[in-house]
Length: 375
Image (cartoon, rainbow, N blue to C red; front, side, top):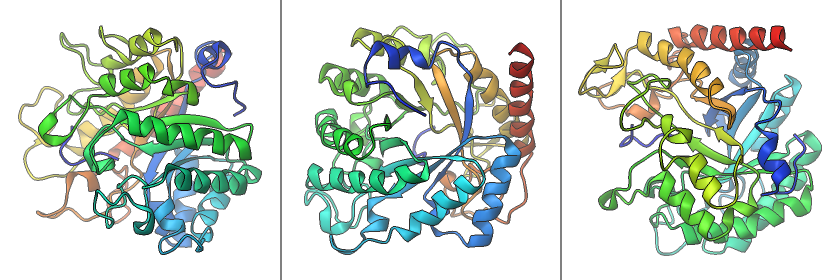
């Protein structure tokens, strides 16, 4: 999910078949990214979220499967029922679940960072991999075969010891075969890369640099697709610029993600946009147009325009297989002390729909109707 400081059967990973599968015969799919909210919501609100996802026309739900949630207090404790209800509700509505398997309980955390932080990496990659194996073993019979391994490992807020491509590559090397040992059909995504510049003082490593380092280490052979979070607000995702927006950095800039993948032998590897969106509340000035300067968030009207344009922009990029909107609902009321990251929802905290809900639904439906006529 955004930090407040920053704007299916599978072929063998890394093979030519898996790399080109997302481009030939492409049909863009859509999803909602929920973070960790569904795990803790009431049964009534969970059912409402599933109904709304169906109405929007999305197929995929991205939900945190936090190791910290399932084994919070000890290695002998398993609280799978917390995630079971999410998977069961989604499958009952014909929706696919993308679990983001991540986050460490205090008892398993790296001692070099605060054990109270869920984004502290594990002290032992093997323990994390074993948890992932058990998760795949449990949920493959329920139709879950697609997994994202961690979230935004290229920035300190989500890799608390500071981003380290070598260390993340080691986590992948342990976890990917563990998941596949339980589910040979597993389709694995790289942990979603935050779209940032390299900023040493904040311990941010750019998405291009981090991906290139993973390529140099051979880590891309562990996954079937990469995951990326191209927030562009207040600009529309389809905006063309001289320097390159976060969307243009997918395939239009010199050092684009597509170019990096090709450089390391993964030409055509599918890209999943597992988060993108725009907040409608934050301290500071709201943007009502894409060119508004010195703004911290979008008006509801501009958020709706961004939601509609997200479908258009993603559909124009051949390497993009799936695009997820973050998020479903605001997780706090709009107050002077609430954070920007709490207000990316298609709905307000009280459940009222923002204009972006209808805008996204209409854009998805228009895309699908157009594809139906072409097919």
